Length: 494
View 1: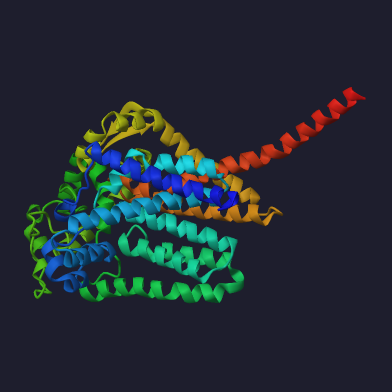
View 2: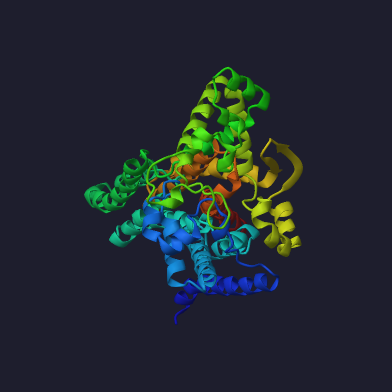
C-alpha cells in the first residue's frame, strides 16, 4: 500500500479502534443499553400492538410519524426473544455511522485529517454520544439522518451523483417520517436547495424528490381520512401548551377559565392521564374495530397517547395556548428565551432519562459538564422546567453559527470554486441547525437540549469551517511575511 493510501486510511482505522475500545471501556464501567423505553415511552405504540397488529397499528397511528414504530415492530416480530440485543447492535452501528459521518463532514468543510480525527473522536466518546447510543429512542437515528443528509448535499456540490441525490432525499424523508419536528416544508426546502445547487439538472432533482414527498403527503392524507387531521402528528396543540400555557400563572388561568376565555384544560398539565380530563373529552366514538384507540392505558400500564380522545384534547390545548399568546406575549417571549437557554444545555441534562448511566459515568460526566461545557451554578426554574447555564455552550453555539453564516455569505462569490462550494455547504448546515432550533424553541419548552443533539455534528463542522477560513486568511499574510524575510536576508548578504 502506498504512503498516500495509508495517509487516507489511517483516520478511519484509528477511529474504528477508538470506537471499539471506548465501547468496551464504557461497558466495563457499567453503562448499559436501555431498551425498557419500549414499554414506557409515550411515542411508541403498545408493544402488544407492535407484536400482533403491526400493520393495523401503524395505520391507526395518528400521534407520531410511523418510521420508528415500524422499526420497533419489525424487530419485535423478527426477534421476539432477543429484540433487546438486536436493538443494542443496531444502535452501536448507528453510533459508528455517526462517528464516521462526523469525520467526513469535518473534512468536507475544510478541516485537515488530524483535526477531523481529533474532534470526531472526542465527540464519539463524549457522554452525550454514549448515553444516546445506549437509549432506545429516535434521537440517535435522527442525528445519523441529519449528518447523512448534510454529507449527501456536500457530495452533490462536489460532483453530481444519482446515488448521493437519492441518499439526500431518502435521509430527508427518514427525518420527516420519524419525527414531526421535520415538517414537509423542511423536505421542500431541502429539495429547493438541491435544485438550486444543481440548476442544470433540476428536472432530475425533481424526479428523485417526488416519490418520498408523495409518501409523506400520503401519511398526512391517511390521517385526514382517518381522524380528520391533515398532519403527521396530532400533538401540536398539547406540545405548544408546554411552552405557553404552563408558564402563565395558575391564578390568571383560573380567572380566564371562569370568564370563559379558556377551557378547563388550561388548568390541567399537558400530557396528563386520560382520567384527569373532563368526561366530555374522554368519550370519543368511532373506529371501534381498533380497541387500542380507546383504551386509556397500554398493556404496560403507561398512558396511551394514541387514544382518539387526545386529538380533541390537543386541539383544545392549542386553542387555549394561542388565546394566551395574544393576551400575554411577554410570557411567550420569556418561555422562548428559556427554551433557547435550555437548547444550550448538554443534551443529556435530563435526569430521569439517563440517571443510572450518568451515575456509572461518574466523574467523567462531571468533567465534561464543567470543563467542556462550562457549567455555571446559576439556574432558572419554571413550574415544570429547570434551566441551567453552560457558558461555553451558550457562547460557542451562538458565535459559531453566526460567524459561519457571515463567512460563508462573503465567500459565495469567490473566484475559487472549492471556496464557493464550502460556503454553500456551510450555509446548508446553518439552515438545518436554525430550522431545528427555531421549530423546537418557538413551540416547545420541554427537553429542548435533547432536540439539539441531532445537530451537534453540524455545529462541529461549522467550527471547522471557521478554522479553515481563518487559516486561509492567515496564509497569504504568512507568505508575504516569509517573502519580506527572504528579501531582508538577501539584503544583509549583499
